[in-house]
Length: 435
Image (cartoon, rainbow, N blue to C red; front, side):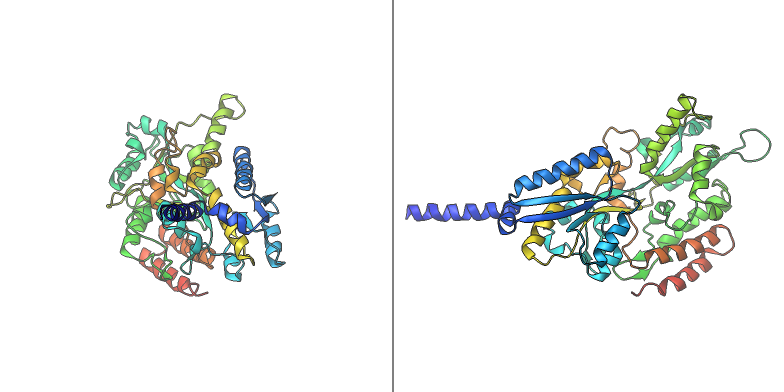
């Protein structure tokens, strides 16, 4: 009897280990080669990937990873051709494309997401890979927009910088008004507080529109919602900064992002603007070139900040997108399981903690922790990751984005009322919602 009990205990223990270490069990079911493609990463991140592939092979005896490094110039075309020919890789970094989802070329990951995964991924990260109620990629990292401030102009006007990079909208507006001034005394404004524009594919000012709960689409209901009261509040705030408070760079609707960036970095005619966190290195390069005498101008005393908070007090942010790993259709269920485990292994929180800082972005998993603690430029932005809003995964998003931006441009140029612009945007977008 005692021996039988011990046998039962052993059986239960082995079973629990099989569940806990499913990767080992999966490896025993399938062996072979996994074709992995990815686009170029910074050297240190690329080395991390190769090490991760090696570790996975060691955890899965009999599994070999064959890695192909794509190029930015021809990588997309190569991927498209492989999908069209029915010979795509098994898994690809940055391979999540809407046409692939609609063609049935990708595997949904829902059956491989555990309850722990769903709690661990930031909500915005999962929403960015969601279509028709399913998730189509393993979120790996988040990209965010952030506010850039010229600390020298703040100091010149004796305007305090936002503490810990946080401010309310009222505090933000007050600062932008004080930072708008005539520097040379000729009776004309030389410096404006804020610079922004509505340009297709660039969502930089939308952090202000999202602050009170506004969105462009309700992706679950497939509805246009930019005309909601929550969104209109944010649009009105941006309009008022140009026309009522006159503390935003004029002609906002007709500017390009290049114009705004140039006003901040070169002409120093604005004290604040928004762009991706990825351009921080360009400011460092600018300062080095000024120091070396390679270019004329002044070094920029850069500080970052969150978008101004809405009445809910949350650090809402806009982001251009989420980097992910996509798994292509697998005929063999056993191989599918191993490929999914590879995707999960690459995007695990522990791994993100190591590789995400090498790419200069933010983790998609909460378990990665604060990878930017102590970094003077990025540590303030980390809390916003939890509340980031990304472009929805809609097949007609690019067209929708274009229609929305064109109408908002007209509104901010004062050629249409906000109400009229939104009505027209809604009319055009509703034609694009069905697919």
